[in-house]
Length: 558
Image 1: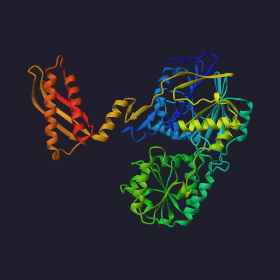
Image 2: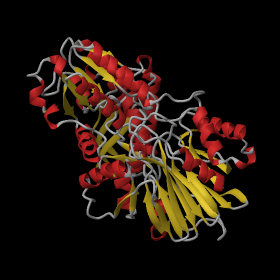
Image 3: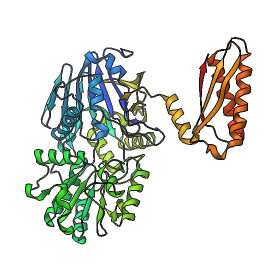
């Protein structure tokens, strides 16, 4: 599909990710032969996606229309908005526009993947207006859990389309970057055709707490502890990193940084002025164990339980420099993202077993969401006063609740669109309709493979993880219709063979008879014998064990 089924006077809006899910946010606006793409996010796999490293959008429509794409616009630097940027730029190399911190994080990714000299990069600021043919982009400052966060007002021939990015209304942000309410109100008063707004916290009937509130708790934790403090948070959450370092300096603690992404965050924060840490207060790993515990803060990656992150290795005792001491306090200043709860709990338990005191969860007031609750979502709707409304960035139930908030603010139900990834909304100044659908299935990344893992492979992995593998080995002479060797059975993850001789022998007999019967069928082939063995042995094993292992025949045909 290289062209959308829309009229020349219509502007198309669609999402390749971020609709009905948390993560891989990627949105696009198209007018005739011009496309602007907003964000290039990644989603981390749920537990059932065995072996999958990342989930990214299907870029096939954008690849087919690469000549129409004028820019990739970045709202902010979180992974669910920039994490797939190297995959995106390998598929579609277009100019990238991003704020200072997001651009620094993007440069790190591009350097790592050998793209830094192949991509046109532009640093943007709130006062900038970006012009692309028939469309232009105005930025407005929002607040989130990372500095340099923007919403975007895209002026098209059909009208103004606003994409909020992730936002909350934090009036006392630690970044000294308050939301630009005046600019939002001005954009709304001039007329907004469509509002695309963050739905993450649509189920929370609240006004999200300020980062300053978390800062008070962090200060108190530093007051109350005379042992080492290990502080774990998202490396991109510069506000938390800033609060932790400020508290450390106020309490005379020197700061050690562990984990590649945290080292990068501190380096970027210092370069951009978001962190102010005297050089003599930063120490390396070898100095940590030579200072009194009350003089040490360790900033660490691993707040999501990642098995190879610094904190997980500290917890399980495999870190080269840091071992847990009885008076250590570990602070988790984050909440688990979907799919990571078990991993986080495992690391917490290991830290506690090693003797540390672990502070975690909102009950301890050391985390607040970077996304606005219902009251902030209603405030955004009131400021923008959109004619049409499309909730984005959230699971379906969140989008639905957010749509209800729009009705409360005065957006008619028929003017609100809850869409799926790939649905195309066609807009004019006076109309909106769902006009088309483009490919937008999940693309799985496994190692160096992109998109080569499909549902069949995942189904096999699921079977392997649940019931194991049975390998059938035999040598078959089709001409003489004889089995010259075997059949033999090998089990991995299904049964312990030494204790299951009777089952193995019965299974071999079942395979022997199946192969002999199959060889006497008309049009016999290796393929038909394989299928018969798989079908009959699976039924046999289920009848005997109530389990369904993956059956893998390996025949030598002579």
